[in-house]
Image (tube, rainbow, N blue to C red; front, side, top):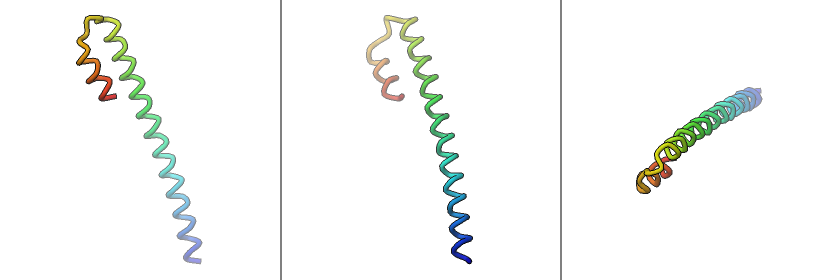
Length: 61
């Protein structure tokens, strides 16, 4: 009986954890997408951007 309760709690915890991980992953992907868009906008607006700066921005993504 004790094992069954433990198994159910473990299963529910795992399910919740996976859901949270999924949400976190989606948020991270969304943020990366926004950063990439902003970065592209900056690049289009300022074509005389130093190459070093571009590399450092790309490295942080």
